Image 1 (cartoon, rainbow over the protein chains, first blue to last red):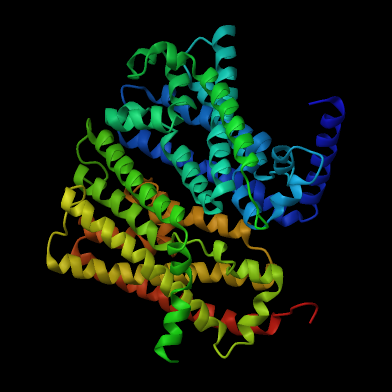
Image 2 (image 1 turned 180 degrees about the vertical axis):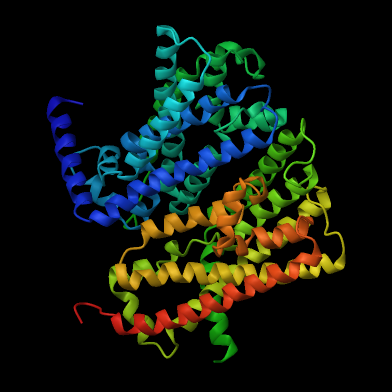
Length: 268
Length: 267
């Protein structure tokens, strides 16, 4: 993006934020929702950890790193790239046609549709959980390990954004395909938060290769905590999770561009 | 009201679903994958643990899978049909609910009935498949099955009234998006969709006794898997019935108050 484009994005974001502040109660409620939604993941994880003896050979401090990583990656995705989720509604309402005639890429306009207030709540809880997970961790947080964790967070963010972008691309052809993105969010929230090796191998394989949510948090956390060789995935692939995120996102953006080229609105 | 008219109102949303093939495919895939994943998860968790919180492995798997199937009952997307109270309030079309020769509360109830019946068809099909595949256990006796069916019916009524309450909120706040999201969350957490309530700490179980959410799902499913014995089921059913009566009276009162507030296009 050129400097001028960045300046426009920044100005629109500021305006969007002020627009959200116009409705104070709704603004605070949206922050609360982001927070509450993530607390449910913590509750679920806590119940599992307290009721069952370990999970897949991981001790509880290691397990906590998985929901913390997933949640932080998710919060960043909602903040920076989240508006692909729910774009089916814009397509159904024909708003996407307006984007097409403006001198700004459609994807960028969709991202600037509104300010994601709930991301504030998401990120607050996620940061809290990450601090908790790191303080309980027995690992030695060297510069290399910390750098890998940051790369994993960014990779997780891009991978999640890639999945939602792929669904959004399908929505350009079938607006009701938007329904899948809700399911995707459920799946990521539920099954992205604990070691997938508690599941049968075929199911774990499905969540790794068919719907690659294992790369968001489970595999990077396995590499960090020394479980990288017990995941059933080649070690080099598990270690390359952040790169998988980058490649998936680039692929999803190409798919989006191609789908947009084949988009026909209600007017043909 | 003539039955054909009622039928026409009730079938609107299901018809919308049937006309959108990706939605049907998505629902089928989503339900199948969710059942497999949930069953695998609880089996995996129990692999190194015996009974915990009074639930054996098979009871926990049955509970969790039935919770997934039951969640289909309220899955329908009215938003696509542009017929949510929120949308009507936003566009001012709520006024048409008050101009038709059909009271808005009856129209609302018929729509919800149609949706829940459509969801029931999904849930029952899923249940039959899971039972045949041995994923869920059958009920221990015909008496348990009967009490469970009654409890489930009461649970669905409670759920209907809770959803109605959130929709009625729109008449006062104009927007209920945030409240609806909070409700869905509370419903999932406190009804035992995320995990059976029995696994939660005691204070959490006590707190949820004072809220209507556990009456929607946790009670019927606990009766089904035998975690609540038939001897204790009477009290639970009475509590569910009490919620139905209380919420029914309250929502009826709100419908009357809401009618006085409806303003479209500046009055």
